[in-house]
Amino acid sequence: MVAKHLADQCHQFTQYSGVRPYGVALIIAGVDEKGGTIYVTDPSGTYVSYAAVAIGAGSEDVTNFLEKNYKAEISQGDAAALAIAAINLKSEQKEGIKHIKMAEVRHDTKSLQRISEADLEKYYQVAKQKFTD
Image 1 (cartoon, rainbow, N blue to C red):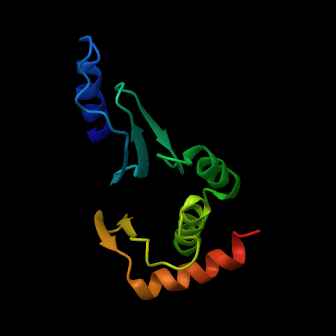
Image 2: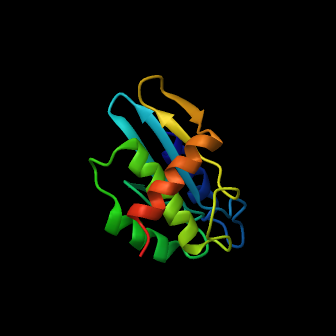
């Protein structure tokens, strides 16, 4: 609902020449009674659901990497490791976790929980083992 509302607001402004005040793409994650969902909205007013996606500079390569490595049955730990590997794929800083902040949308509590630096380091080690060439 949130993604649709934001996309509708963006699309409304595409009706007027030279007016596009919402010039950003967003990745929106959430949980409802059907489970977790990720949507991407863009300034034209479209919104699309994805299992794993990236936006911004280098996003095509990162999205291809995610499509190749993401599986619906992936564990939370492996998903976090995959996210770190995807970030480091195109990041200027290719090693470590100092440039990464991560949170998870929890299904059980329907809340956002920040991932600790200790857990990030653990996921980084898994990412190095499983997702690097």
